[in-house]
Image (cartoon, rainbow, N blue to C red):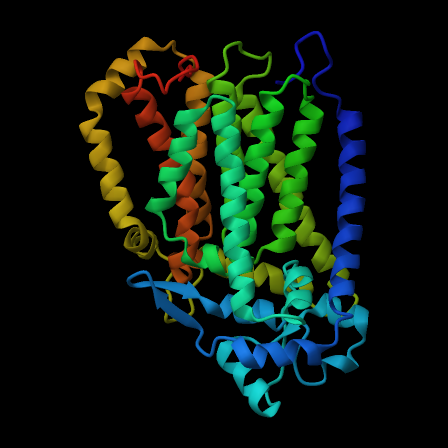
Length: 426
């Protein structure tokens, strides 16, 4: 729970001080860990890459959905390429040279040809796991580790919800997994990182908001600032929003289902969490770009060019139009969307009955709509990026399905023994 009204909930001075300390410690960790990862000799890594690196950029499993092995090859070859040893440790760590896709990587592994591409826009934080792991094991084993981390973090969030009596939200969290394509998130570490962060943060949020020890709004805000920092460090603009929306679902569940309302309602918490997550996310990326200025000219002009392209650009083959956006997202989520709509139609009567039994709490209702809409806003804001990478970025709609089914399960279970907590004030 948050501290009651008798305590100071928010102090700007303390918040800024805590955020500054978190930023300094986080950036120090990021820089030192990336430097340490690049101390590992490439020869140890190349041996295992030759045995297990995928030869194709994409594979097709679980039907017709692609698994993005291109990103896997990028993550596995950060710091690798012809003449990368001549760059020096700091320059190599910040420029992030890598072999641009699986086909280029295999050409390099076979005959040493292929110039590395400096992928300096990202921290490539997963290299602190990938490079040490590849020095002793194969890509296949890293996929197994990724799957284990995904499942373990999900179970932590699920069991935390269940332990605190939030059984219907826990069930919705589970059901939502079947409505989006998760292949890349299950097996490719840079894709999985944001999901792992999101599930762990969800469990933490539930524990703190439903715990006996009060948590201040300052601490709550700083936690989401840190989550944003870590999301930008480990991710590659794959599914960053899930590191925010999954814990937001935890915030909503903890507040909407609790027996006694705190002085701070769900809307304030949801908006604060979103605001400070975005600050952390932008600050983390910007720090990497600022560090890269020492070695690369035109950093921010290149970032600006790419931002404009990903938002609504076109290159002749790809048009960043609204119709193409709808087609790209709809193609990946049509089955899940159709099923969700059918359930909503079939549940019209219990939904109406449920909404009549609860008070009109517009703050919680606004929180519900806001969390549901966040993935749609993100996908629309990065229109061209969504069109190009629709088969994995559309998985960010996961939380929209989770929120809908949480509402449906609640309306169905008004008199069920599963529904042990008070009704949410939607």
